[in-house]
Amino acid sequence: MKKISFVIPCYRSAETLPAVVEEIREAMMTLSDRYTHEIVLINDCSPDNTFEVIRQLANEGEDIVGVDMAKNFGQHAALMAGYRYAKGDIVVSLDDDGQTPASEVGKLLDKIEEGFDVVYAKYAQKKHSGFRNWGSKVNAKMTETMLGKPKDLFISSYFAARRYVIDEIKNYQGSFPYVIGLVLRSTKRIANVEINHRERANGASGYTLKKLISLWVNGFTSFSVKPLRVASHAGIFSAIVGALYLIYVIVMYFVSNQAPEGWSSLIGIVLILGGITLVMLGLIGEYVGRIYMCINNSPQYVVREEVHYHQEGEK
Image (tube, rainbow, N blue to C red):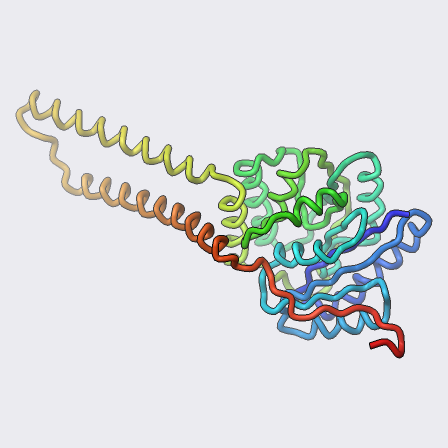
């Protein structure tokens, strides 16, 4: 039988995590004639007692592997850590808040068995907050433009992937992982299946505007050079506009014996062009800074502790 590894990044999920684990076990019980399973729980330095809950779950069942991060590295770094602990033939990633129903994992697995390499859950109606839904739309547009995601492909945090795709993702050693980009560059055999999306049981999403912006920057600076090309095009466009304006000034000088007046408009143009220049320099600096961090071997994550099931009497 094939083994399924469930990889779950955990942050402020002490109250929701036991129910998620129980739902996974119940779902896999109905598929026990085809699959075995394990559950890898990664605590991303949560400020509550999430890791104590993970430790308790690991002590109660041998299907649990618990990992505690030394500091908060973010969801995608936590996924990378989980993938390196997962041993399954198929790896399923889902959330720790219960909004992504583990009870419907069979739909993802059935689609994988049809021959697809990666299968993402697609929600008819998302139950996230308006801010989170807006962030998802911006992220989808960014992945289309920067990473070449097909327009009809829905990307979500609930997905299943074959072992070879996970192995390819694990090969990435950069300091700023972006799992969606790693999936898209690994295979084109990606599909969607309809899955229900639930209301959040309690708590709030850990994604703030700052974290969303950081995630987007990770995506386009780690896996695309299109922003640099945009900078080049903007520079060329500004140079052409400046040259045309200079020609206009020279022509007006010879035709009317005076240059066009307009000190305010001239200063406005200088400020706009200067602003564009500074933005582009900042963008280039972001790329250079990330290269510097990677050269200095800045870690994707640091594991503080891991916990496994121990039978009574074992050390």
